[in-house]
Length: 389
Ligand SMILES: *Cc1c(COP(=O)(O)O)cnc(C)c1O
Image (cartoon, rainbow, N blue to C red):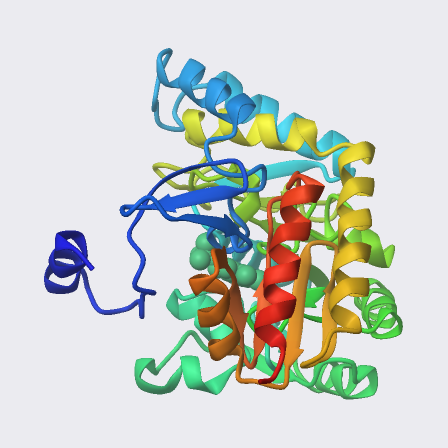
C-alpha cells in the first residue's frame, strides 16, 4: 500500500473500513488499481455506475453540459433538469419530480410530502410513518429514524420522532400498527438492499398498497438501490404491479454523479408549494444531463438483458458448491455462502473481482450493460471463491 493510503488514513474521517485497494481508473466493467491490477467491478460503487466506469455516452452528455453551464441555482430554468423530470414522468406515469443530491435527501423529501399531505388532509397529529424492520433509508437523523435497524441508531438519539417499525411480510401486523397510530405514510423497499438483498413477498406488497390506498395513507417506495433498471424493470414497484404515491431514488440514476429524486404521483404532485422544500445543488445540470443519458437508455431491450443476466447468475450460483441460497431480483443479488461472506469477498478481490456484502451475504450489483463474457469470467471466480477447501 502506498502513499495514498497513508494520507487517507491520516486525514479522512474514519467512517469507512476501506479495502486495501487504491483505485486509479477504469473502463466499462473493469477498474484498475495504482499497481495496474485489473478488477471486474461487481459492485458499481454500490449500484451507482449503472452503465459502467467512464461510459462513453454518459461521459459525452456530462462533458457537453459541463462546457455549457455547470450550475445555476434553482432560481432559473435549465434544460437537463426539465428534460430529466419529463423523461422520468413519461416512463413511470408519475406527475412531478423534486431533485435532491442523494438517496437520504430523496427520502427526506418523500417524508415531508407525506407529512404535509396528511397534516392538511387529516390533521397535524397524523404524522406517524411506518417502515419495515431490517430496512435501510439513509444516514440523516430523519432517515435513520426511518431505518428499521437499531444498530444504526444507538449513539445518535434522539432521532426524529414519529417512526415505527413492523416486520416485513406480516400484513396483519402492519395493518394493526397503521390503525393504532395516526398514520401519514407507509414506506418500503421492495427489495431490502442493505438488509441482505431480500425481496418482499408479492402478496404482502400488494395488500399493503391496497390498504394504503383505502385508508388514504401515502405509500412511499424507496427505490434508491432497486431503481433505474436494477430490478429488471425501470423501478422495482413495477415488478410488483403497484402504484406508489411517492417513489424516491438516487444511486444508479446519476450514473456516477450525485443526484436523487422524489417522484410524486397524482395525490402528491401539488403537496409542496413555493418555499416548502429546496436544495442548492438539487437537479444540478451536469448531474441531470448524465442522468438523462442513463434513463434514456433503460429501454425494454436493456431490461430484458438485465433479466437474462440475472437468470444466468441465479442458475450458476444457485447450484454452486459452498452456496446456500441466492436472493434478490434483476442485477441486485445476495449470495448466502457457507464460508463467511467477508472471506469470499477477499478471495474474489485477490482474484480480480470486486464484490460487496450486505449483512451476512455477498452482494452483487454489476453494471446493467456488463458484457456477457465479462460476467461469465466474474461468476467463475466468485463460484471458485465460494467453494469450501
Ligand atoms: C443507499 C440507500 C439510501 C441512502 O442513499 P444515500 O445516497 O447514501 O443517501 C437510502 N435508501 C436505500 C434503500 C439505499 O440503498
